[in-house]
Image (cartoon, rainbow, N blue to C red; front, side):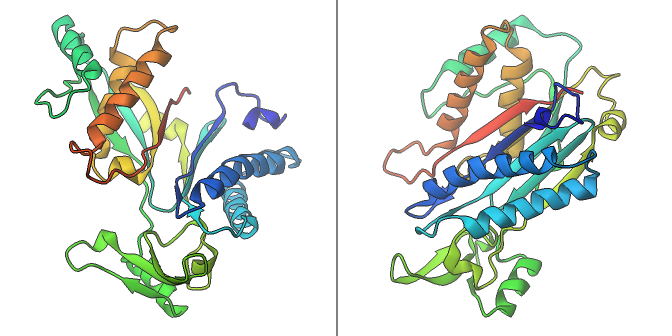
Length: 308
C-alpha cells in the first residue's frame, strides 16, 4: 500500500482494514468500502509532491471515508469502517462505527515455563464448550489507543442527530444498545441503526449518521520510548475486530490470545500462520454462545505485529 508512494522508503509500511456490514446488502457495501478506501488513499498519496504531514494524512483519510460513503451503491445496507495505516514512524488509526481497534504491547516474562506452555497449547486446540480451562499467558499485556465507539447515546452523537430531526431510542438498562431510527425504503418500515456513524445507510444520512472517522495519530518513536519497548524487549501489535467479538469478550482477553499465538507458542516461521488460524478459531469459539439456538453475530478480526 504505502510502498506505492515513491517518497516513502520503508518495507514495514502497511494498510489493514476491517469493514463489518449490516442489513440485507451490508456485505456488498463492506466489500465496496474494503476495495475503495485503500485504493483511494493510495492514489492520493502517489499524487502528493511530498510526504504528507500527520494533519494532511488525517484529512486524506477523512475525505476518503466521506467520498466512499457518498458513492456507495444505494442497495439497502451499510458497514462500519476501520483502518490502520503505518507510514514511516507514524501510525494512523481511523474508525467509523461500532467496531473496536487498539494497540497492544506484549511484555515478555524473564523465561517461559514449558509446563505452562504445554497447558496453553492444549487449551488453544480444545474447542469443547463449556470449559473451565483458561489461557495462562506468561507475559503480560497492556492496551493503548483503544477507539471510542460511535453510539447514539453519547452526547456529541446524540446532539448532532437530534439537531437534524433524528429519532433515537436509548434502552434505559442498556444505553449502549441505542438505535437511530429512520424510515427504510428497503423494508418499508422504521428501522433502528445500531451506530451513529457508518458507510452507506443512505436513509440515515439525512438524520445525522455520518461517515467521518475518528483518526488517532501515533508517533511510534514517542510510543516506543514512553513504553520502554526496546529496553524491555516488548512486542507491539494492532488489533481490529467487529462487535460480534467484542460484545462478548473484553479487549484484554482477545489480546492475550493473540499474544500467545504471536510470541509464546514456540512455532517456527513456517508454522506461525497455521497457529494463528487455530488461535483465531479459538477466539471465535469462545466468543460464540454455548447453545446453538442463541443468536451469534458475525465475527471478524485482524491482527498485525508492528515493526519499528
